[in-house]
Image 1 (tube, one colour):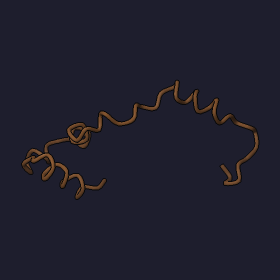
Image 2 (cartoon, helix red, strand yellow; image 1 turned 90 degrees about the vertical axis):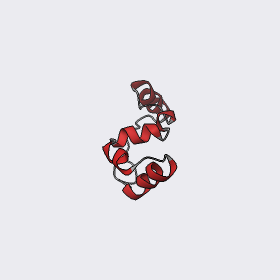
Image 3 (tube, helix red, strand yellow; image 1 turned 180 degrees about the vertical axis):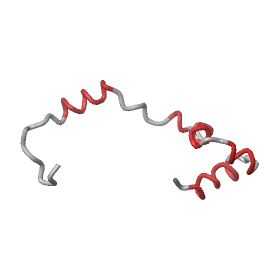
Length: 65
């Protein structure tokens, strides 16, 4: 975790006092920074969409996976 970066965002950008910053969970800090507007959670529907777009061919890939 990039604590220095998170401290900069919390203390400087959000103007939090250090004792307030350290009482927050990482998730609470990310929400305060607007992370809830990020990408939606990976859902079964998204997995199905990817499976249709990239079906298994039964052949081993060149990277051994």
